[in-house]
Picture 1 (spheres, rainbow, N blue to C red):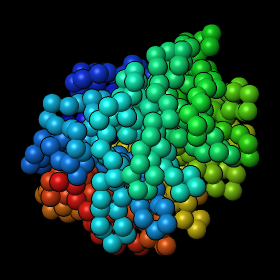
Picture 2 (cartoon, helix red, strand yellow; picture 1 turned 90 degrees about the horizontal axis):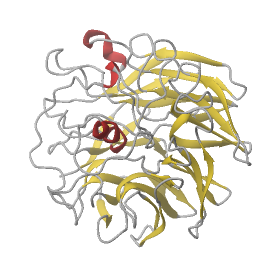
Picture 3 (cartoon, rainbow, N blue to C red; picture 1 turned 180 degrees about the horizontal axis):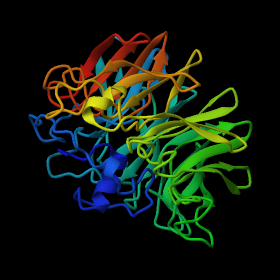
Length: 429
């Protein structure tokens, strides 16, 4: 592993000594349990420069947000206030805009004062962007921020140590109030929190009451929450019947219920970066970044009453991994067909050097998977490698980012048609 993968995976690596700098506690959103499937086997070309030496931003890490035909995103590293000495949690990252024709502009560089560092999510609400950072802020525990499409950034809330939420993950807009998942909380096993647009924060639920990390109701929530008919649905990385995570529901009072338990060797483990669920006709769909038959992740569905099934097991070894491996992002629904990405797998150049650098795939609600694009064109993966965020659909074309690849190895923004014709719009350098 050259540098920490996404910010959420870096959290896990930091806990295992893989990254320097401040280390969020076990239970930061998206923290990944140590397992064979998460160990990176891919050898990738060396980067031409150290990350952080680019004001353009490096390593794009969140789903692109469309606002009036322009896309907005974030990078983990880089920006005007980041240099080689900085870590992910000490003044790095950007918010950028990019047109569908590929004109990219940095709107904000994190790290000047207490505005946060290491952006981990972003959504659009009524033409304004709202996001979170895993580091920075007044107390170094992350922030919720707003930013206009013109680049005017404002910190809405700086997280503190427990019992407050800290190291926040993705946001969801519910009737004008922002909800998210995080580490921290009363038992230091994670929370669901809310923040108003004026910056009033509240811990709605602290995971782990009376039962510790193996709590049957789940612990260490991760990914973005999903609102369906007044209920919030999400996933946890631990807890449940096998202590491998759950799909949970939460009502207005903050009471949660575990609907479905994951098991690593059977139906997958609820681990991933920027993960979450989607709703298709009342059924929830998602991915796990580990577990399943080959320990390379799964696609699953679960009803709101808790009846779940595995739709697809991603394959296990190099020759078998053409369907992809390690899906880290939520699916999206495009006219009844689900589209997703995998961090690894696909059609490798050869089994010794590459085990594939990721895919875009489709899956039907019944579980039939088809790869529409394999990343890794050429030994430097100029078309990008390791897509780790969900795709965004704008006027019949899909847009996404790769965490690595491109001429400098620092990631790309790409477009791809529904049939798989891919084009790199911007390479971060």
